[in-house]
Image (cartoon, rainbow, N blue to C red; front, side, top):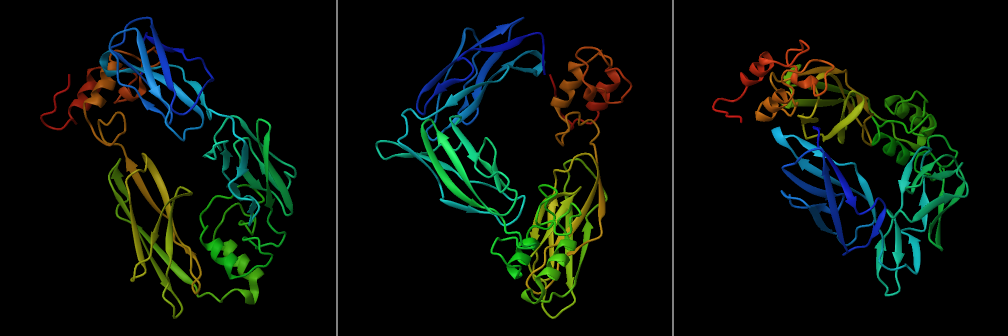
Length: 406
């Protein structure tokens, strides 16, 4: 990706301030050689067209409703289809006029469990009566008067840490606004903060099965084992007593369409839920891959659901299906199944196809050995420590018939 050439943004300066509708003039310098073309891009603002001759000067217009620090960078095309990227700088987009007031977008926020996180937007009002969301502005600051109940980070993300109340304050210059935050109750199993443990908390917990606890004090992890799973549902049912319905047990079966498949090829995961009571299981199954939620499928009339996955990386993956339960049926977790994703021969860049881009990577490191500048380990297809004609041949053999690469 890098060559001897280097790009740098010489204007604007890092941290320069703009407002919506203004034009950002960007100049770019090239050192240590020539580039074929240069363009610039900015986060939430867009990209310029490529320019092929110096001096490289570009104009970007800041869109309306854009607020906060935005990354600005330049991209250069060089020989052999390679690119170089300049160091990133920031520009700060702020309102063109000073606001007359700021406010949170709601006056009260409540938390149901320790570890729950929420973010409430901030609105600025101007002299002409117009308003704009300034939640992303670099000019606002947040604070909590009782962080042991609810804390807030510099971006405005609030986290529930204990029971009680806290006042969250936002400031923008000399303007301030305050919002009341109510932490979760101290009642174990009360996940919605209403002070009692009942079926509402049960259904809330069922909808979160398979989630990752936010920390050791996450109230959803009722049994404290570091997981939010069926054991927590069982613990909540004990706390709930007669306030929760008696749930019929269920069994979840899981299968994968294949136990080995090439990268980017589809794998169908299918789950079937069997109930033990008179009420047919309804709801959904969460498909969890390597401990992370992959997708959720709704049960059909046959108590079945399936998803198709094409994004799993190379390697062996462990998959489980978690039925989240309903008002009459308890959750259940399937036995795990494993699926191995194998690399496509010749797919050097792991994008799921073998094409000229893969061949270009090998050509770019041709003749290089491990440890030498310019050696790309992806180009060493046969892993013998050197990129040579054997690697080129290994990729070329996998190209679709009729493919011509320059």
